[in-house]
Length: 126
Image (cartoon, rainbow, N blue to C red; front, side, top):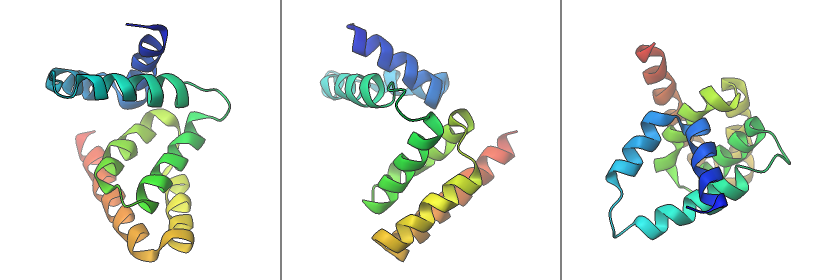
């Protein structure tokens, strides 16, 4: 491992939690190993590791970008991460309202439905 990978894995665990990262690592194969290293280094070891903005802000940006670009499959994971990043439900709905205005109501509506379902699962697990 290099420094970016070490940093990336540390940040990834802090944001997503050990259970999520352990599952992802257990599912890694030779086919996607290089891709997993890329996202660990670039996303987690560079972007998420930067202290230029807070993790709360980064979480809000990530959720808004996922919704705006229609990458809905990662929204539940990043909603669960808000428990560690400090982004509140109010922060998330504000981000999705921006999505509605600047990227489209259907995308925001779908993201909100995913967030509601994920929050409900999180509350049931407590």
